Image (cartoon, rainbow, N blue to C red; front, side, top):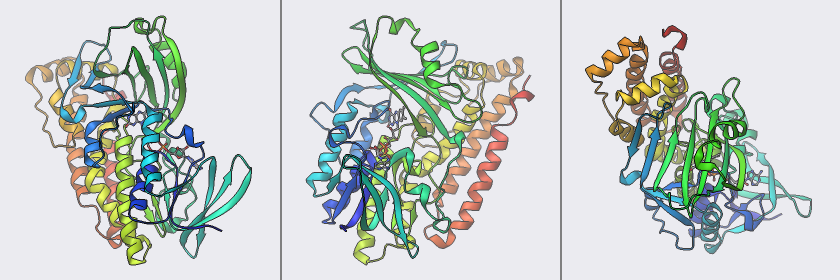
Length: 459
Ligand SMILES: Cc1cc2nc3c(=O)[nH]c(=O)nc-3n(C[C@H](O)[C@H](O)[C@H](O)COP(=O)(O)OP(=O)(O)OC[C@H]3O[C@@H](n4cnc5c(N)ncnc54)[C@H](O)[C@@H]3O)c2cc1C
């Protein structure tokens, strides 16, 4: 049976970064992927990546067609289409990726550093011995052959499916299942438009609670009159079929008349705060498997790569000490929370507000600037902001008998601040974790009941 220092399950953005980071340090690394090598990178995705994510990780800009189009910012359309927020800031500058080429570029980085790839290989389950994950059971899909791989560390980078996380024992204190309310069901197509020359450099986002309850529609330019267009709906309660919504409401826009379908498909996005704890004995959880997606816009490529890098660094230190216990791996939690988790958790509160807002609230809210573009920008950057609600806005909302929405917005901003402080105090050691986790649960329960307070009370 082959033995490795590190087995990484999943060669997505998180897995490739983790394999690259650990292999670079001279560790014996194995990357397991159910897809064939040449398919790695292909994914149902919006394909948008902020440039700052590459900079943070010290990655150069790829030059081989991986970056298809430069983006200057985001435009957010209100449900009645009367107001457009234009968010143009260096942190919103980025690229539309050729997802397959970008994935292949990351994979090459891992393999060039010496990681070994087992492609067409499905990971079935973790091997657990004496409370430690010590390897994985896998199946080669081409040969239909089952076998085991042993490792000092196993990293679950299998994305939404989280094949390892879902099979870990209770005492590792890693949440196995997440609520449907925290998942967006998405449908996406790449289309060639008929009209050339109508190119924009902005990613467009459309809010409409009737078409995309708890989500949004996106239309992102890919260059050459191609677009990446899709929508996501929150899976809480009885949610509509995203593909049906896309065909009934979005493809009927004049923009898509005579357009050609290049590819399409559906997938899931876990849009919530990170798992409270992402490490156990001999195991760490990365990327989508650990719910490391921005809760507002669903972007997870950047944070998943960050988690791959941070988990990789922590594993190197743990193996140097010869200690892969949960305690020894704890710094991965602390580092991720500090760099992205704090912002992600605060935005999870804002998501609660959006989930329960009506089209009228959002349209009037944007029109009368209950929240300004600057507020949205600051929220997006994880910065504190104070609402400066104008007298006109107050008058309008009073007139509309929607003063409750205004109050919910104020409460949301306060809770965002509280959650941010709480996550800034993420426990430095495992001993303080249980207490912190109970406080987290209480805080989110309170935020949920206040921020999502019954719409029916609004008249
Ligand atoms: C519709 C949609 C649109 C999105 N748009 C954007 C966007 O515009 N920008 C952005 O930043 N993010 C976006 N995201 C989120 C982004 O795609 C993910 O956050 C990111 O890809 C997570 O990377 P990952 O490596 O954790 O997981 P993944 O990229 O999902 O990689 C997981 C890998 O594990 C493999 N795998 C799974 N199970 C097994 C198994 N049992 N055995 C072996 N291998 C396995 C998979 O084949 C896959 O290659 C979007 C998501 C969706 C669903």
